[in-house]
Length: 148
Image: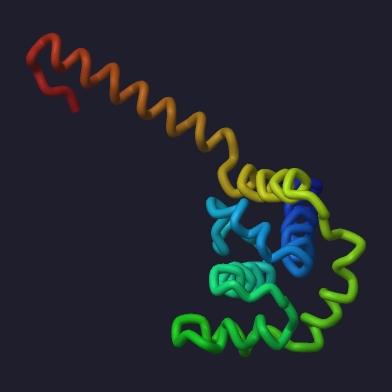
């Protein structure tokens, strides 16, 4: 991945988080996006917390709710310790300039992060493996022989 792609991906990640600060309900439009698709670990934790809050019907996203969400589960409690309330407040204060106000814009950011998480070349390689397997399987079926 080139440096410009890295920057664009982190910018898209920040845009997703900024948008979810204002519209946590948009997380329902990014159910294929998982925390591990984020390259920035803080974004990963914040995304996980906001999605959890949205699933619980909580519409107020603030540093307190994010930390509480992460602290509420044994599995994520250690993540709450890695985020500072000050860092979250700073990010929230700056989020207005990069937040998206439509689902369409938000899903473009999600697509950008997903595309970076699953590069086309990897998908092409995987489909090549499948077609090779299909050719071997069909040849084996027609001859009655197993091919390795």
